[in-house]
Length: 359
Image (cartoon, rainbow, N blue to C red; front, side, top):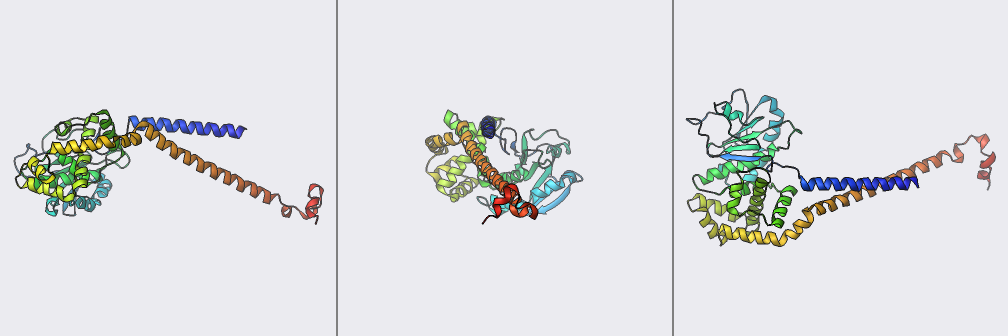
């Protein structure tokens, strides 16, 4: 009876833990690379200098070339920097999904503990907001990536590299052509497959509440922080991914090519997709609305609680089976130890063991 009572208490505490964990996840989802606390930023060019720079602009940095990219990093971050550099091939290949190889060459990448050091070394303050995991100086082909000792930060510099490379490559193709901010971010995130449960939950919540941004609102939101910019990233990523899925990667390539060759972005978009960006966005929004019941069920607090509870129940069942099996094995071992063969010969016909020798 005591064992049954103990088991009931264990299960009750396990379910309580699952409930608390599910509530915490639903209310405060982990922040990923481009979310409420960190993200990326772009500036056209740094106007605090008079001429083109000779890289590296910071003295004492280690240098290394990989995949036609130029890396510069601080010696005390060498291990983390090498981990990023090893991903250069994959990062570059991802950008080639929509962009030509020549756009992803001769790019200068600084891997720093403090990315604003790049500006301070040249006599200027600031440059990147505190939340930025990376900053791209588009016209100069310079990427600044924040590093931190592994395990001490939520920043993922390897993913940041792939994301920022895409920004530089698109800017080089665009030259002076205009691409909206949502397209820059959506293309980069589609290229790097930067989609996860956190973004899905953010998008589902906004869709259910009827609070999705329109296209103009998305671009305005990128200047904000917190949940606002997190939703802007999520919408941009999902919308551009939807365009590629519904119309093929070639449609994205044509949109980039025609816009870069001088056709206004909206006009090129209409030619390729048969509707304006706003009309396409409205169609995407309608599909989101039809599908949001699925999002709601899976990514609501109740849905997350149910999923975690199922896994907890499975884990408890497995643990119980293993415990029962181990107990049976122990009892079997004890039985073997107490068997007649283990007794001294002079005791085998004594007392309770006498019957063991009967034929």
